[in-house]
Image (cartoon, rainbow over all chains, first blue to last red; front, side):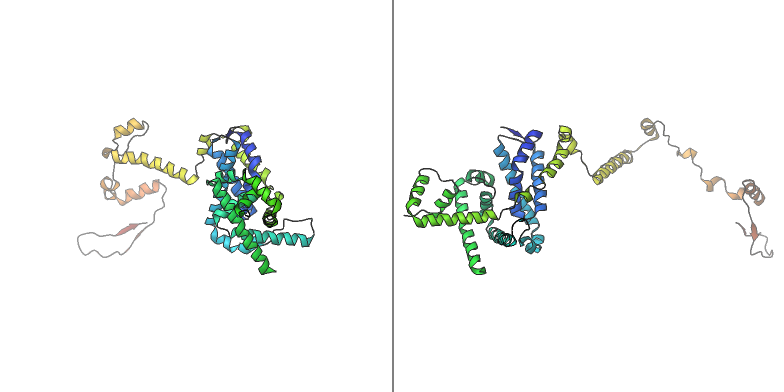
Length: 177
Length: 185
């Protein structure tokens, strides 16, 4: 189905289908909900203003993902200094888990902190691939299209990222406990 | 020979094509080491996924943002035209543009000259009053020397001015020339 970005029904359809995905991708780069929401809004505004016709919903999604990723990365680069200043706050466990007992929540929060730190320590080319794989649930083909690399390259990078994360996370466990 | 971990990673993602997929599955059947390796990978994956943000957080502003975009771009179901969006001009640039128009208009007269005829052509109601014949310099023609002090006082009195006259520095007449400094205040 062809998607016209300025058609209200098409826009609504793409918005509903991709909002969560776009938020997720941006959130895993900027780690700040307000900024992620602003950038997500901007991504969809660009989608409209671009006034483009996409051959399929998937193509619209790839385009949006590319824009979202670039917006988030640019934001990080521009605001590097401020971000370093709030590093500690950002690394603190988020208070998202409720309605479970405190110990369980604390363990999950700790895991979240460790995993995020490990992912953040990855080089950018591996980080984007593993985030799109693990959090956005995209297949290799989609990731390849979003990042403009080959599927084989995606496969290699996913594997490398996993290997590095395994090393980091298991080392951390040994060091901490 | 055991399975290459990159292949196992692709298998985990369901991205391995036949015949490799069948081969991997067959190998996993009887190789405990590779099964354990795969389980470790799965455990890591789970751990990574658990660090995802909860949906309530990610979706909390979904409707609000759509509302914003909807009212901005699709008011009354009608899309805002390209021209209308382009007309959003900031106030400073608008003022600059207006000043430029005025400047060019005035500049046109300054550089290309404007004779009274031309002025009348362009602005019929505007006549150039200041041609040399109609200009009178007060200091040239109507000097106070032509009037006596009495006439001046009468004139000022008729206009309603209250005039005080005092004479200062009165000196005895020594020479023939008469000098009586007066000041009208």
